[in-house]
Length: 468
Image (cartoon, rainbow, N blue to C red; front, side):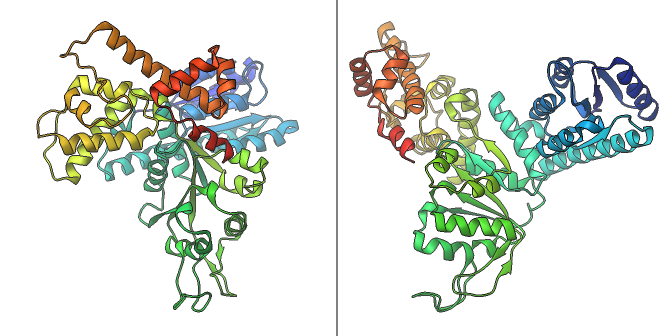
């Protein structure tokens, strides 16, 4: 594996040079970089691999805390060591809670410096090697797991960062955006990867049965309870439990879930005895949980228990660069599921798929690819086949580079795609309020209603988001 560098940042030039001098004697095989500003240090973090970052807390411009946050966003494995005076130790502790690896106080003792940096170097080396080996075990190289979009590469980096911990994770994002994929990736890369990973769709189970499904029950606890039964918590012991649509569970179940997160104890329905379960919880939601807290439909204390670490999955329209990659992955998967030889897809077909808004996100794209594979007669998938199987309101609008169309038709299609994307984003912001959308867009209310009718937009789903 390629070598990494150690970076030191402090606005006191004499102090900075002294630290660098000491580190170069002890860690002579590493590049030791030094900067007097957070801005220059952040630029270095983007230009090369920094394994260990030592930063003063108080600096003009970008503070040490802000530098740490941005540096970890770029490289989640980086070990950040905060340098602070005794008067700001409390701030250093806050930085530890926010992601710093350790801190040392001024005046810095040489042995303390060497010992702390040595441990950080070893930790970073192990984290990188652990990630590399897990990728090899899964049959993938780290490069295979790269995305085309910056947004999803950042998600992948966060997945790798949270996987090495055992904290509860909250995964947010629109329906169909790939939240369960993220949750399973976290489990796959975690120390629990050899144990079970169960997923439970909370709203799919009637509220009267959800407590029993989660915590289990004893014989005779209720009508139909003919024998003792373990719930999902005990079934996932030593492993991971994915709770999908966590925002849908009732307040009484929320209270019981909170108690489990606090005590790690499971009390089956009808029992007076508790059992201990070692389960990592990954909660998924497409709802605005802070908004539900304001509406008194979600417990604030439970939110903070679930949101120890968080990963947000962006909608597909914000990462359209990934669509060609996803299409090819889905084609390979679908062909395997149907026991078919790999299929080719026309570049014009991929280009058309990449231009669509996909309101159903990744799930909708997967369904489209499955339809294309099913209806393809072993030949390459082309725009003509898309016109045949496309069931969206714009069906038949595919444009092939080999099939020229009139300018006005191409312009109309491009305008419709733009209008759909633009209004979808506005309606998400206004929760489907046409008057507010008209005010922001500068369009007449009647004009927006005409566009809604022409594109067959369903704005009721945006209003439901507000009610949720």
